[in-house]
Image (cartoon, rainbow over all chains, first blue to last red; front, side):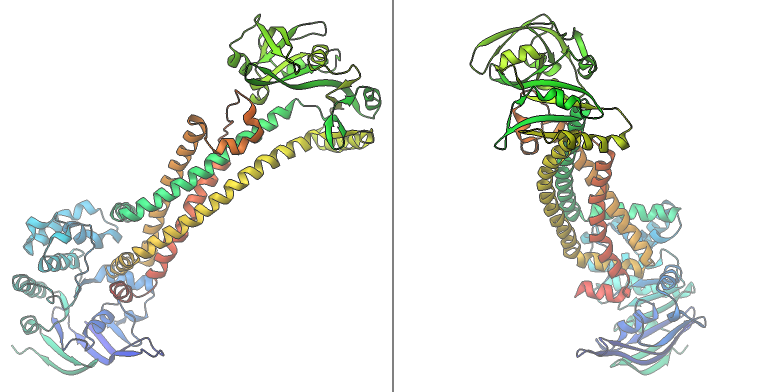
Length: 227
Length: 399
């Protein structure tokens, strides 16, 4: 279980351009569930997702994973935590240019003590499940936005993390890719993954077991899916 | 172990992916290391040559001076010098330049009557026989001279005197000294022959060679200086020690290579700026990549390792290629421009090949100067980027 306790993030603190992006947010993401954050653009969803995934240090507050305060970890331990436990899907896709789809999927394995050759088949299988079997050896620049985001989803899963953090994964994605990704998240939830997602796409939000609505960096409403 | 292999392969992959940065850095480092190594190899070679040429030199040389200019020295000083304490031998010498065709060579007349000095050992023969006190009209020539003139033992050599009178000699032997300065342009003859050749009065010689007791090296320097002081009060004379000659040579070549060092430093600074600039130019790309790698689990140490491997590989390749280019430029092409500048008056010698010495010190230093600036220019910015939150790094790169 992931618990965010009174998370606050202030950018450029003490400067003229100080911005309080997230204010005193406390949320919970249960294991094996999809937890969604919805809200208008600029309401602090990405900042909150980054803090939950330990990509961003909170100005105040903490993140507990299975009751352990991971915000107190050193930079090195945070890297190890991300390596072992978290897969990220970013709004801006963030694939490495000049690499093909397969190489991008396998990039997170580089810092693991594994033989990369052993993971080629699993990587190809993931790409196949996301409908990219034919595009595995294409340079990412040759892929459409939707295809690129599907590569990013495969990359997030190659290390078999328990937690998936997906920030607006459908923003730059065509309808067909959006459906593939949405279905894939549903399947991952069924496999017991904990998925934390921010979105403004209703189909994806509908999939969530627990939804938090954000506005101006605060949680303004939360509700759980009724059976 | 697999992890290190993965990171190493990733670093190789980065070198391929950032092709423009790799090419720019490689070209700049190769140019700078080639310039440096070329000059350093010649400087080392010239220093070696200088040391070799002085190996058989006398401990002291007494030269005549008038109005600050070198002149022949009075032969009557021989006795006075011989009486100085610790002096074991005093040998007069006559030498100067002479033309054979368009070729300028050095003619040296040595006094073979002094049994304490074994000139035959200083100029080891590869063929023929050495001179003796009675040998008239005979010369012993260096290997380089023989090759240049196409003559061998028993051949006749005609040399023009300063008054353009031809004098004929028979080549009795060919020597091959360790120093190419000697064997490249030297013709040895009897002192008496040289006096006639240079038309020097009976009471004068070009200089006087003084040998001091052969004691251990530590004490010899002090003893030589003592003797030098003892005989320095001779009128119209100056006393030059072997050490002084060596220092003069080192200073001459050192100053010339110093000029190139300045040029090289300028190039190196330019390389560092270019490398740093490239890091900044591809900085957005690199910053984004570092942020992303950290997001997927790379630690700061992993990222520094990747950049270290990149820099070490690039620096090593550049250093190796630069050294190869330097050696090729010096040894095969004859170091055009650099050699002329470095050798100065030595270019007068016709058959003098550029001495190139490849010392371990120069090789190691070349690698050091190609690797260290690159490490600073790439690892430090990467480390700075890797120490910020991955989200900040990626957002900064997108900004």
